[in-house]
Image (cartoon, rainbow, N blue to C red):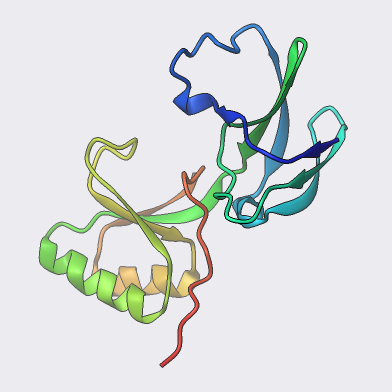
Length: 159
């Protein structure tokens, strides 16, 4: 089976009961695989599928519906990512930390107090040198396993 489009996302359905009676077969992917438009995957029931999304398609996300048939659906399930959740106490501390991490070309995602984190935080992929830096400057952080809404991408740059 070749999947050529995402049919929707379970987390964004106007009516959550739309697919309530369907069995969810999952394609479990690490975050790094979400950026690939063309790939092979195996569901948690052992079914091999091909994913070939058109050029310009967005990244895959947790909850994406890839296929619906009879009483079954195939859904993307993203593995948690090892991350550092940084919760600066002041705007100054946030600026200093963000500047330092930006100089390392480290990708970060930002969340407000209404998010699942319950605070204004910056989240980046775990890196032991970043953890050492945060510890040395006394910035509050925790190391967590999280399913990220958007995959971290390698930052291309030139000087």
